[in-house]
Image (cartoon, rainbow, N blue to C red; front, top):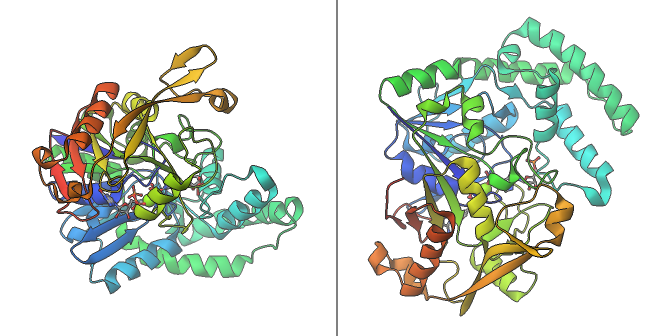
Amino acid sequence: MSAFIVLGAQWGDEGKGKMTDYLAEGAEVIVRFQGGNNAGHTVEVGEKQYKLHLIPSGILYGNKLNVIGNGVVIDPKALFEEIDYLENLGVKVTPENLVISDRANVIMPYHKLLDALKEKARGKNDIGTTGKGIGPCYTDKVERSGIRVCDLIDNEVFKGKLQESLSAKNDIITKAFEGEALDFDAVYNEYTDYANRIRPFVQDISVRVYDEIKANKKVLFEGAQGMLLDIDYGTYPYVTSSNTTAGGVCTGAGVGPTMINSAVGIAKAYTTRVGKGPFPTELYDETGEWIRDKGHEFGVTTGRARRCGWLDLVILKTSARVNGLTSFAVTKIDTLAGLDKLKVCTGYKFGDKVIDYFPASLEDLAKCEPIYEEFDGWDSSVADARSYEELPENAKLYLKKIEEFTGVKIAIISVGPRRDQTMVVGEI
Ligand code: GDP
Ligand code: IMO
Ligand code: MG
């Protein structure tokens, strides 16, 4: 019996797509358990680059089962655009290699509209969401007024639920935000077309994933976003609206914790964040810009420039604890090549104390001053390394520090975006 988790250990964009694709070679089933098309996962295979938002990164293999779990919020328009995009690139997507949970909540046009209207109303306190309707859809789920995939594919049930929801939402859109009401017939007709197209993919995925694990198939759970965007353990309210941490796997795919064997945290060799919110080790100088340019740190989903900063071991330690990480995969050490000196944050000075955990209160976090340790840099030969021994000595010291501080071993080191630019150095 074998199931393992791959998730982001920082603020997202750590290279989960690349690592999922790499690790999917040894897995038979790949499952997304939370988030939606706010995610942007890049996979490079040979000369081709794929950008995935909603569909698990295992889809590129053709012969693996990919699962969209109940914890995911699904925008059917985005789903079919992504299927068409993949088919245009020669990747087949059929009910044989993709199944979708009947319990997943559906992103409706009013969720996207409300995402934009709420952000506008927040003014300078906006969250900087991706604008994909994620927060409003999860809000309805928790409020128990959401429309699920099983409702969407039953025309009568869908009609009733849409009538109720749309009238309530149109009230909010027009009265609270002075926006324009949505037309029932237009939404109903658009979504019944999606219902017809999605129906063959729909299943009880908890039963399916359980059966696959019991049949000794290797199952990979692919996280979206990252530890500090978690609704409970992230930098609330500057977070996404789902549990991005390991606990989200159980609720988002209907599997028990005893069915999962390991969890690998994907950590970028430095830190990035897109959108608003605190970021203790952020660099506001030319080094930050240098990292952004060299690392092509621009959002896959929104195109926004990512904020860049030094590696923060407080984040990785928190991630190791909250996710029960069994190993790290460290990406993009090649991006840092060429810097003379590097800094790594090993704690926060908080009043007269030094802490190595992330405080809940943003007011407390604002008072935290990062404490840095300096490391010597390495050169671009790092990108050619294919084994630990071939890495420059200074890169080894940097990586050792991550293991020492977090108490978690590094299993994989990535030195470029492609599958072959990866080395396995330990057990995941
Ligand atoms: P995800 O959201 O975690 O899947 O990450 P993104 O795809 O949003 O961003 C990671 C970016 O880094 C992508 O463009 C990847 O192709 C790229 N990438 C991943 N690993 C490496 C690496 O080790 N080195 C370099 N240079 N790029 C990498
Ligand atoms: P992947 O899977 C980085 C951020 C947004 C915003 C906050 C809330 O590619 O790592 P939302 O639209 O989810 O309500 O936005 O979360 N965010 C991400 N940042 N990577 C992502 O996904 C993200 N998905 C959402 O920028 O700050
Ligand atoms: Mg991304």
